[in-house]
Amino acid sequence: MRVAVVGAGPAGIYAAEALLDDADVHVDVYDALPTPFGLVRYGVAPDHLKIKSIERTLCKVLEQPRVRFVGNVCVGADISIDELRAAYDAVVYAFGASTDRRLGIPGEDLPGSLSATDFVAWYSGHPDGAIRDMTLHARSVVVVGVGNVAVDVTRMLAKTDGDLESTDIPRDVLDTLRDSAVTDIHLLGRRSAAHAKFTTKELRELGELANADVIVDPAELAAGQELAEANAAVRRNLDVLTEWSQRTPAGRPRRIHLRFMVRPTALLGTSHVEAVQLERTRFDDAGRLTSAGPLETLDAQLVLRSVGYRGVPIEGLPFDDDSGTIPNDAGRVLRDGRPASGEYVAGWVKRGPTGVIGTNRSDAAETVRSMREDWAAYPSDPGDSAVDPVERPDPVERLRAAGVPVVQWDGWLAIEAAEVALGARHGHARIKLPDRGELLAAVAAQQQHS
Ligand code: NAP
Image (cartoon, rainbow, N blue to C red; front, side, top):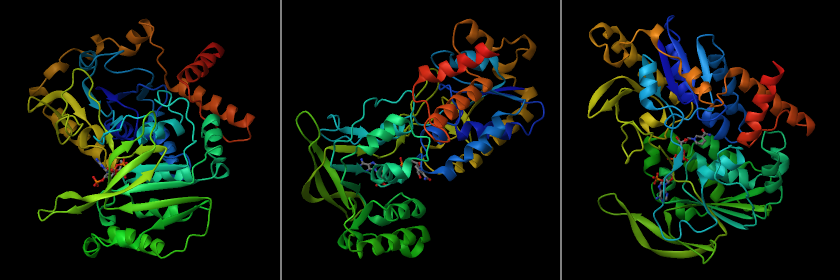
């Protein structure tokens, strides 16, 4: 059996791992980037070294002899969905959620208003990142949303460059953070603190920063307290926030303000964001969030919209625009409401952008279980895979012949070596190459040597 997995992030790699339990399965893991590991490399904050170490586990899967990493190949552009379906017995789509959700308020597109997705891509050295020349002249930053990404971007803005020296963060990012003028970061939760999406472990880190005070108004913690009774995770968050609300600020150079029951109604400014207009929120009798009237206008020269990721469709695949996911039943892709032969889905593009990295393991396991059930019924359901596997052309050869600079595992190892060498020149364990040209040059240099 030959299976293609589209996306070399955790969901795709966990799917490959589960597939390898069958001794006769070979898996090609495609990625649009020349590098594997998806959001583990380009989403997990650089200072979260323990979470990043999951790379080592994921690496073991991609190193298996029955797995090929097929990097730098954009499915939908370099290779079509139809070609993949014809070349493999099954395809698992695990390409995640690569864009951001929108606020839908006036001023959202003013310069100085960025999606947290783009900001994360910037500090992670993503080669396709939208932000190239970042400056941090802003003194006051508003972060909209209170999920773990909001906490990540806040922590990255609040840390000193010394805290980040031991990470693989690109040099120019470190320089920009070192020169940052940021003094105040305001996180805005539109619902109560009890509804906040961040996890306690991540929240607590904000209170442990040497360089920043956390400031919480006790009055803004009043709503939603009743939810803590039935939910230990909510209780833990509220305990942390309550303790902070009683702290006297220590006069540290930066301040993190955590706000609840407030939302932005407009970003103000002429050629750049200058302020954020806020309103207080409340729950109406039906439990819906509604306006409780205008509030202050908050000075802000930078706004990071951290209101969740969103999946992006690939031509040739069914897609539900509302949820940003591929319609599926336990991982079986549904075309016109019916399971499509040989097409599966895993990870965020299956269930939406929720959960932690480990969630993708059980999610991928469910998908592979569905595949096995279908394979057990294979003789009566040959579908699109009736072509003799020996006669099927290898798409990797076709791509190479077409001039696509496919990056395989040895190419990735060359990138790793180049990043370690760059790090060594600056006294670091490793520094990321943030540019696709540099990544591909590292691969080409290795190919010339061998
Ligand atoms: P998220 O957890 O879904 O949080 C999104 C936040 O945006 C929520 O507070 C949400 O409020 C708010 N929001 C949505 N639309 C809004 C609007 N129009 N106006 C104002 N606020 C709005 O998303 P995320 O932070 O991007 O994280 C994505 C996933 O990655 C999560 O599962 C997260 O746990 C995970 N992650 C984990 C880590 C970690 O473990 N260290 C780090 C980063 C990300 P409502 O609840 O009111 O909708």
